Image 1 (cartoon, rainbow, N blue to C red):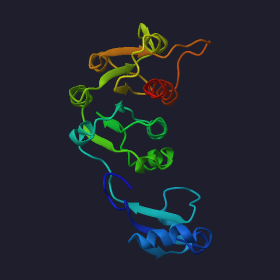
Image 2 (tube, rainbow, N blue to C red; image 1 turned 60 degrees about the horizontal axis):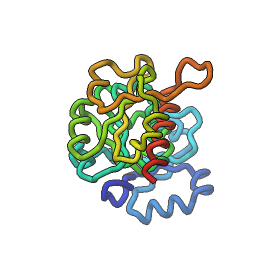
Image 3 (cartoon, rainbow, N blue to C red; image 1 turned 90 degrees about the vertical axis):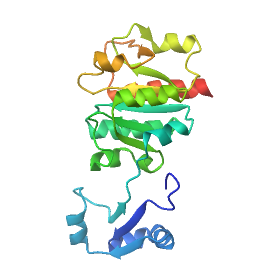
Image 4 (cartoon, rainbow, N blue to C red; image 1 turned 30 degrees about the vertical axis):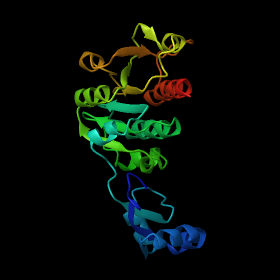
Length: 228
């Protein structure tokens, strides 16, 4: 459920075995007005994009909202993904943003489609908890969020300012939008220029860098702790 919709699911396909295991869930879906269709295991294998489907497959409405609607909701913590192509990383960031109490995730530029099957699975249900915005540029996102009173922080491993320094200065408690870049090449200069500050997650050991989803988790939880 999201953004005022009574139910995002419009149809639910279920095998006899899954119906026996998850009868209460199927009954709840039917009670919410979802069309429930029992299918054979063979047909489920054809319908599902996974190798070993669990016997339940839902058809859902798109959940993305306009950028202006998200900005107008006065969020305290947001994520902007700029040209993030890997669906597993994107879905994991979406899940992490949900866990950290963020108000939404913006898939900007040439980022992966949040409805990509792997992205949906990696979000572990968080796609249905958080508003998402698609089809906007990182520049438009940064402008709209700054206009809504958020500080835009770009995560970049080569930045001079570290997350520790920002936290010690008490500057993480303000409403913040974190800008994360592509897994392979990070944030280009034009994307870093969109931010109020460019921030590095400090590396204390010998690792060359952090995975995008790991870096996002560190940054988002630092902001979440500071705001609480």
